[in-house]
Image 1: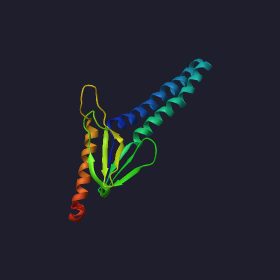
Image 2: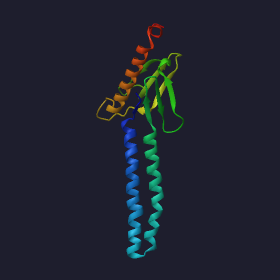
Image 3: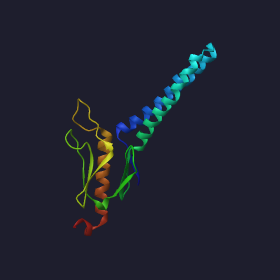
Image 4: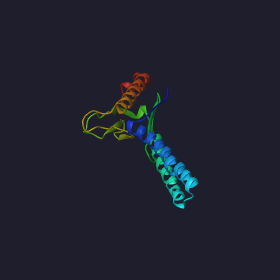
Length: 164
């Protein structure tokens, strides 16, 4: 089963981008057209120049929020950062899934590979408030799902792989 997870920050970026587009269309699209129709003032038409800026800013925010995600399948974990290609790691290459939950540490899930490398899942970041020292719920949900999928893969892989 394929599961897609996003952190709270990514969901917020996606919805803020959509809101910026909507507000931009109203403020820099509808309002200037109505003002020009009613007053025939060329200054009202100049406000239309803000429309592409608002739409571009909203689109970039929405794309970044939609693109940054972690996809967990029974055999692999894949993630996309804001820029660059998607990365995929097979659970057979992962020795341990480290989940930092406090202000110390990398602030993201770290995969410890069998060859000794450490890979950070940059698509899901821990967001902390100034009031709390605990990670947000979306981050913890993604981390738990990743740990469960990793443990499940190793359990189903058989005793020969588990004993080394």
